[in-house]
Amino acid sequence: MTSATPPRSSRGPALTAGPQDNSVDDVMVLGLVSAFELATFARLAADADMAPDLRGRVMLTRSAAAAVDRRERLAARLVELGADPVDAMVPFTHVLDDFDVRTPPSTWWERLLKAYIGYGVADDLCRLLAGGLGERTRGVVLSALDDAPHSDLAEAELLQGSAGDDVLMSRLGLWGRRVVGEALGVVQGLAASHPELLRLATSALGPGDDTLQKLFGQLTAEHTRRMARLGLKA
Amino acid sequence: MTSATPPRSSRGPALTAGPQDNSVDDVMVLGLVSAFELATFARLAADADMAPDLRGRVMLTRSAAAAVDRRERLAARLVELGADPVDAMVPFTHVLDDFDVRTPPSTWWERLLKAYIGYGVADDLCRLLAGGLGERTRGVVLSALDDAPHSDLAEAELLQGSAGDDVLMSRLGLWGRRVVGEALGVVQGLAASHPELLRLATSALGPGDDTLQKLFGQLTAEHTRRMARLGLKA
Image: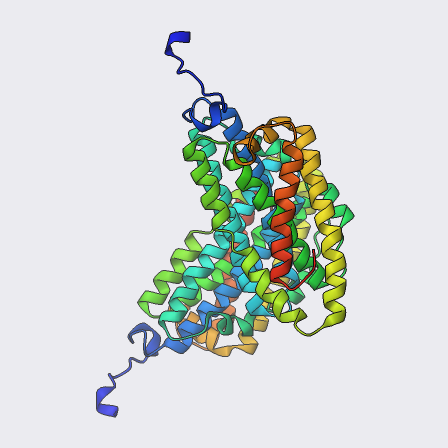
């Protein structure tokens, strides 16, 4: 048996091995991203119910359907790997519960900014983790993440709504700091409950004992860039 | 100008004319069916939130996305006809409001049966109206209606849940009579606010002054057949 196993590089199996060798990691990340897409659907469907006009409502139902479509593509890859797409989500379906309880938005703008920040952090995390996966799964995950247009739409709406309104800008700045703090708390919780996720991030962040710190640094830097695009201080 | 217009048959323009000639009717029915699909999305998304397990939740999000996809196909036909897909829905987006206020389900079973009956009546109505449209639009509408699998799923779940439970069966029988009464009230309201809809139904129901009575007769007969499939008395 051992002679048939290719030698593994010191950077771990994820970067050199084929899909068969790291399918446990692939299934884990596909399950995590799928669970995020399920939450995205629920958020967008609720947004559609609250939309102030019919055109907005129609657009939001379309975005919600797109989240289902992305999850289906992840599910198809899970089936290829011999995994059950629903079972793969189970460890991650309650990951955002605490986050949602601790950040109840009180206005439409807070709701929008919360989604912009939350999905921003989630997408960045998933992108980093995808770097540690087999090539085919990485491609499926990255293409799903690239197809999610929520940040562009939220950005345009936030920019338009807050333009020239200093009071709103300052409130949203405060709100953004609270939301990103809670979002990073979710990442910390995930790293604690699934330490193997952190190992996947080393391919993007380099080896060492301080992966979590480096991960936080990168996620925070991306967040700061996103807030700057809205004219808000992170 | 008149010499270029083909002679119209005594049965009205809907059966013989091309899409250009009856595009007002086409737009009206496409708008009505689109508005129903928008309501279907909202209902299924809410169901997904309430689903007792993850597998059911995932399935319901998929059904909700399918309702968006069907609406998109209707929207594509509206665009072909030079109409705005959102504007076409406007006259019909509140058609179900009263129905929903008057039939608040108190259990999951009542919710399921309400959808089964409500969509049943709505689909039958739309099918009858489609008979009066131009061939191409009729095809688009009928194919959208045929792709809606909600009745099969609800039927299977209701049959399984109520099997052998005489008390539940009798309660659901009562509930079904109340729901279908309100659903027929919606049809009556639609016929009053959009008398041109009724005219479209004459191609299926034959000419005469009693189209509304014939329409009610046909919708009731279909409803009775549906209830019988559940072992319930209509």
